[in-house]
Image (tube, rainbow, N blue to C red):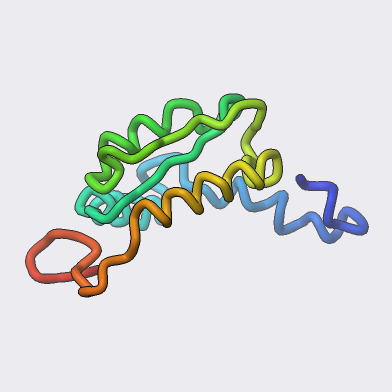
Amino acid sequence: AYDAPFPDEKYQAGALIFPQLVPITPDNPSSQYNRDAWKNLQLFHRPFLTLFSDSDPVTVGAEKFLQMSIPGANGQPHTIITQAAHFLQEDKPHEIVKHLIKFINDNPLPLDSKPWIKSQGTNT
């Protein structure tokens, strides 16, 4: 994934620095954004689907945490896609699309615009 779209090394700088931007300690200033996002995700009641791969050492087990933490994940057909790794969208794009089309068809957007989350009168 890091080599394919780049004509030479200088074009890889952004892709190579990206993993260093992911906060992995609670004191990282960017980690507050993640905590805020989790607070909102725990209030998210619209349908939420997880698609994970069977061979990604980075995200192994994360699907269970998402499914338990996000109310909208309850009862959805979550899937582990086989013979795929961390870049699931590169390894199995057609299988992802198949699952997403079914998910969208099974969960049509309601005509009335209700808040995405259930909280004290806010929809952020």
